[in-house]
Length: 416
Image 1 (cartoon, rainbow, N blue to C red):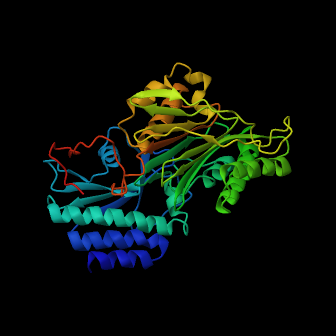
Image 2: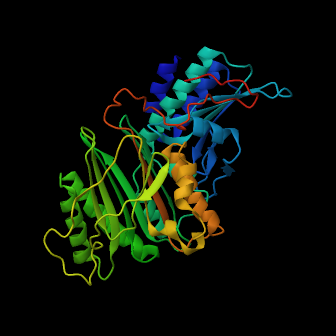
Image 3: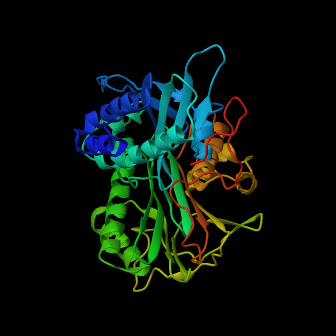
């Protein structure tokens, strides 16, 4: 069977069998001794091995493999396949990124009987990239991938919260790169983030519902649903904000939700912004980080405030090529993290892809609280490349530094 034929067979197989088809193809076509798919968990700090050709016992917790300091971490950050050949072992390990447009879905790991040549590495890289499309196509039809991403059971509030997030937590495009990360509190709050790419715009939102647990998750559901409904009907930012506010007043009882809405033209870079009582975003430009101080409008559904026409003002936001914009919730400003210099950390992570930068920022907040959060911590990281980068390669998304990744033996890994 040819590579293309095997991948076509994987796409037409039952969702839970598609990984097995790819594994059998690689074993037959490349002589692989074993093949595994490792999926990134919700936090992005570890991977979970999905047993290929094994039954998935969904009542058992997934086996978590921490990324820090491993070959897996290097592959995800560099977005390049890497080769490891230990002298005492007759087998060669190859690990390749399973990524689509910056969304680091997981890793493909193979053990081969010999060091692969350039052509074999090319086929492995292409297979891993195709596997990303297979996972994306199948994950809406099965819970296997959801199971793999859960290293601990989710509460009902956390389940609702995760279902409000975009299907891909990161996106790479010619004009921009964007990624979000969310760490629920011990008692889940109502943080959400969202983004969408239209023909001529990219739109982002970050929201934070008052309270904790299921009540906050339900408020978040109201606002996210209202924003998406208005957005999909073609409404501008002011109307999106108005409909979110109205949904809260009609159905949200006494709660309220803060939020920020952002809309960027992919034609001329013009940027619009609405701030509904939300913490101010941070912008890094030329190696310096400053708060953007907008005009502040009321949170959605604030009962102490009587709504008026045109309550939500659409403001211009100065965004230039090379800027990094960080939108966050107040959980990133926890009192336990008052000694954490967030602007300095943003500067120190400037060489990382937004996906890795967002996760690093979240981890710093979690570490500052000794693993416990009083409030959800959420961050969205946007790199604006400008409208004149239509030829930019947006297939994967890796570190901003263009260094050649090395295998563990110190020799350059084959390039994709």
